[in-house]
Image 1: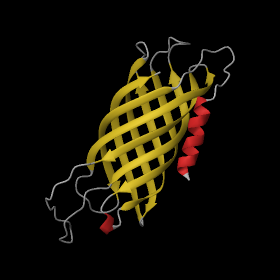
Image 2 (image 1 turned 45 degrees about the horizontal axis):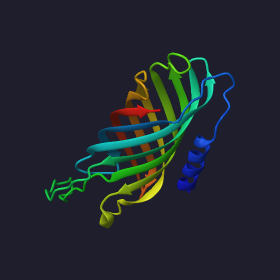
Image 3 (image 1 turned 90 degrees about the horizontal axis):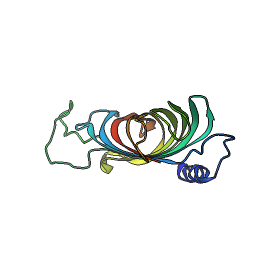
Length: 195
């Protein structure tokens, strides 16, 4: 259900939008690498891991100091490596790693910026929306499957130097119900924004 919705929004991002008397607002591509942490879902070991994230976004309607913005994000959070070490849980069992979390989100929000036209200064984006979430954990323990979730993010970017800017992001994904448990995944990353 979420994949067709993400495809529709991606197509909408590519359609030219008239922004009467304003500079054109190109698509931007953010890519970042960072760290993540999982929450909820009972006892796990290794809740921390890496975070990879990509966001394609476009501003739709401008206003003084900012614009409405929409985008499609894809991210991975978790620990892709494993060892055979047994960390004992409260009931004497060996704990599993926190599931790896992959998401595709359809996001909308606000981009605040300094500067005007092509000389855009630093920007701050606050985006939120629904996400398709795939949990990739121990299948025998019922920790593998897909569900709907919610995603939110705060991105801060430096002024562009040519087509590139540095970007830092803080992201959160909430999974209200998966196999009877509530999960969350939090990440921060640093990367590049290309326009």
